[in-house]
Amino acid sequence: MRLSLDSLDDDTLLGVFSALTVPDVLSLRQTCRRLLVLSTQQIVWQNIGSSQILQQGIPFSKKPLSSFSVRDLEDRVRRAYHLGKAWKAPSITFRASGCPASRGGPVQDIHFIPGYDRRWLITVSQGIWSMITLWDRRTLTRVTSWSPKKAVFSALTVNTSEDCEAALAVSLHRYDSVMVEILAITSTTPDSPPGFECIARLNTLRQPIAMCGSLLALADDEAETVIWNWKTQDYAVLQSPIDADLWRNQCTQVVFAHKTILVVRARSHPHPNTYVHHPYAQSTFGWGCLCRFLYARRMMTRGHPTFKIQLWTLSPMTASNETTVDGPHYNFPPSMTTEIVTPRRGALRCTDMVLGPYGTAVWVQPEDYSVAGLISSNVHLQNMPDEPQVKSSWKNYGENWTCLDYDEERGCVALGSTAGAVIILDI
Image 1 (cartoon, one colour):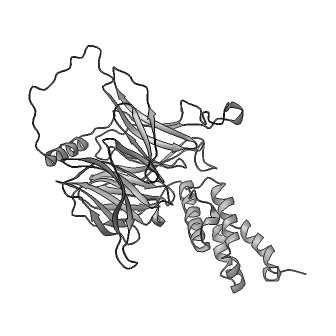
Image 2 (cartoon, rainbow, N blue to C red; image 1 turned 120 degrees about the horizontal axis):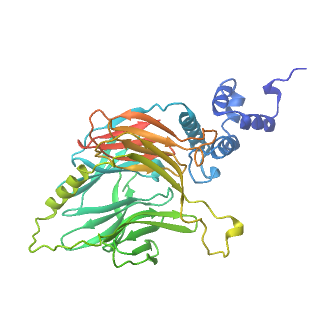
Image 3 (cartoon, rainbow, N blue to C red; image 1 turned 90 degrees about the vertical axis):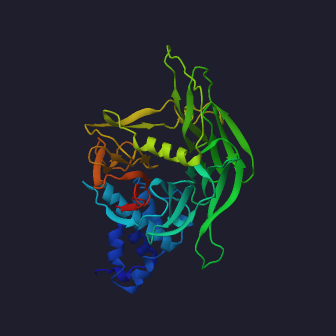
């Protein structure tokens, strides 16, 4: 006697659904109402998300699968499945959309906001005064702007946590003060448009470098990195080795890893026969000239004669190598696992490069000013070739890109331009 799917009990059918691919589940649910109801059960999408997304190394949220509603979980799993198929394809196809130019002028920086259901995108513009513009990713419209009077932004970092009310930290320079403000995206009423609200501030000359939840990393250009909990006001000081011969010891990156904080500093040593000349006179022309000078330096940045991309990896220590509970958790120094050298040469306005947690990276290449993506088998998606793949995806015909950001989980690239417009590229 031949059995049909409709004759099976619910538990057996749920097991069948969990073994199917995402397209098969979507097809099967269209056959009858009972299968439609069963395909919308939480357990179905948790099993698919675990076996076909997380175990395959496809970019996904760090939050537990059980923390999402069934509708949100299905949407995220379907999007992640599509993203994994796109990365494994021979080439990537982007769907482009754009936001109109803002009144703040050229876009100096651009960031996706991980929290708030990943709905928001911000751009930073530098005119006479600095301005942050909030964009709605769903409607591609400008929502609001934030520009404190007579203030210039010297540094900005976005909160990488999805569950924190704080969205970003920004360093504000005024004539009489320098402070770091923690901003949240809030609405006064359910029907009113959102805006920026300061929820904490700190008077400090140190620059915000990285933010994860309630922890903010602040650093100077000498040797100190301060980890500040803006909720409890507790802080810890990380002291780097001091070298008297250093001209500069700039902190460029802070990474919050598992029980570990990685601090990256760019050091500048003088030539042994260098004679230092000091100015015999100096004058200041106000914040406006300083903004324009810094922007001009950014425009004139030139690429290295050989365009080279290197991926360095910190590998976790094995249990046998850990001597104490509070000891190091990673082998140091890091090892180079991937290197790509291309003959492309030329100047770049946009020198940004973004590497996602799952190891996919996006940058702008010189010569033809095109967006490229990298994927490497040893740290990225499974079932990939041994050699890393570089996939050119979109060409900048206007040659006017100034900055980029990359949302690995959603497979989305945002590009700012000299005209103040924003381009969104979705995989």
